[in-house]
Image (cartoon, rainbow, N blue to C red; front, side, top):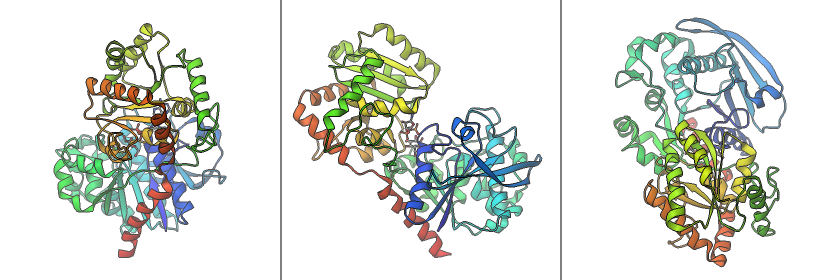
Length: 474
Ligand code: ADP
Ligand code: GLC
């Protein structure tokens, strides 16, 4: 089968969070499984895109409601990625440094989707399946069915994968002029609560809808930022497929970002050399257990709980542990985390920003990773952490619910909080310290964690089965 993924992020070309990791891995692991997995991504001005060479393979014009625009398609010249990556270049719209965060994001992503479909219409080969990801690509199934220029793609089944249902791309109806000319009788397939809602439209028009964990799918039915009724109506075509991790990239035995590589069996004790590097770099006390947080500093991740919880855990439990936070996001949280440095007694530090290498070193050097998330559709951090022998302390929600078993249960290996609150987080830290105080148990759990299999080798088969169920029908 040929499967084309269309998304706003794809590691290593453009990554803001887990969406990028997952889309890149899907392309790669479909090829490893004997299929042709490709990805279509905007040609941003990211470091990776600028530094690598791309071959221009197609140039044309397509119509947006507001007029024609020119676009070009570029392809990767070497085989390093393990999948074909196609970049859509639209001058003035997509060729920017950041992936998101511009006032004209709606227009940018509509133009991206339009160009991608226009190219597929004009190219000879048609894919067997198109898998679109999140709201930035979710207008594609509507466009394939209701824009006359794209009617030759009508019969290709589309899967919509939802990584985050909170963001839906909703826009005022006057934006409909930006869409390529569509069958106005079908306005109801775009509308949700008097807005054009790309995610809602994708849920209606796609052949199948997947979410990145089963737990999250069930949560969406009751809490999906206004789409609850829609999920109820379309429930029969929805399923949860848990993400995997790319164990070729995330492997402590080969990871170039580590001070010291290590494996579960051979030199597990060497893991602590990575902690030593971190402690030296960030002025932390090596003899204390190290808790880290890595991620977007936003409400979904409950990052706002961190400053007060860290401070109060020192008051309530004592200065028995270190904290190191890596992330960027809401200014207030960034400021509070920076301010907290004033109170550090060699036991707290933070790095505000995005740093891929540092994140790898932190997964390896930490004893525990904190994920108090309010919403976590899957979560990759806990999976990476476990692969590096770091114990997760997580809120019991979405993908965290599905991937972590509490140490109080049979064969448990993580610590679960009952809700995203300061008290629960401090209690989680307290329980982690109890575990740390029992070295035999702690070591055994670290080894158990490193041997768990959350790889794509396993998860990719669930996608393939879903694609096959759609192609066999046709
Ligand atoms: P989300 O996609 O909601 O942000 P995930 O847990 O799925 O959450 O994935 C987050 C990904 O982004 C992980 O690969 C994580 O290591 C990475 N990441 C998040 N913030 C940073 C940061 N500040 N620096 C480096 N990597 C980061
Ligand atoms: C989203 C979710 C995260 C998930 C990631 C990859 O960004 O917030 O939980 O792991 O997508 O699917």
